Length: 422
Image 1 (tube, rainbow, N blue to C red):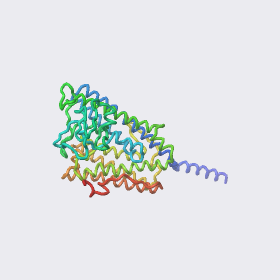
Image 2: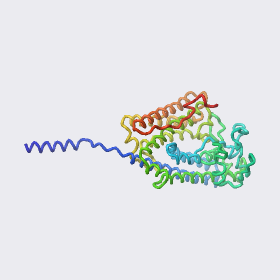
Image 3: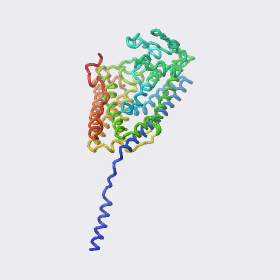
Image 4: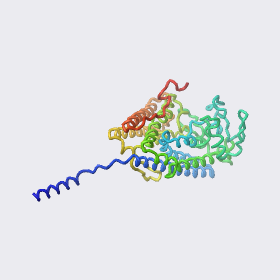
């Protein structure tokens, strides 16, 4: 009997050793900590990329050639990669929403900043008295009895005086898109091939084209410096002692989970699928594409989708190639919804990759949304449909997790199409 008991005990040990050990699910608090850590890393990368942009812009200003201009443009595109992956922190985090307009407002009335082709742009706007202010050409702007001293192009003029002046959203004087306009100029090609084509001599005081080259240089340099300042502000906010991080880690984890899912759902639905994609597709209007001067919109949309997915997976690949990962939503969402959401997020990224592939093949995003381009329109609509599908899964996931109901950002293009254009 003793031998039998011993043998049974040994067998139990062997069988027990062979059984897989089920890892305990992480706590909500651990999931929130990963979210904050990755947000901080992403914003750190935006600062690193913006400083690389400054280096390239300074090199172009010191030696204005087509080659140095091309490198500055490439640095701008590279700077968009980490930034777009941070947009998922909007909507659920008020501190980001209150700040975002300084760095990524669009569309913009570029006539506020510099010269424009009035045949394409127009002479005036009933909605915006600063439509053709052109502060690069004018050291003093007089409108409605108010005089703006623009003799010195500095942070105060751009960030405090001009940006959002008269509370008009199209008065964008700072951020990525103001810099984009300066580097590329207007895209005058409509839904045909080609992006903006500003000449590098616009930044060459010795061979100046279109006048005011010194002031244009100062505007570009100041806008880049402001971008670095603004991004640094948000990087600090997500640090261990920063306001954004503390707001999530010091409160109830469930509220932080709501913030995470709110960002994912609102960016998926109203912002990306609606305002940035469906609206432009409905109108076949290149002015409704986000990176309209550079024809970089396909990449921006792609990295928005990647950023949404990263909140679920708890993984982010940094600019240096290193990967940050940790406990995430995927580890605490019920299995059925988790698998469905993972598949939906992958599908959205895949549909965005189709747009990237088409663009890399020579068909820019503004061409894809052009009237009469059935194949391009279908590719964009397929990406929109994937975003809408993933939003529905996010809604169900929120409900299954027992979290408070979330009201996602909407868009007339999706919710009330008949109102578009009126």
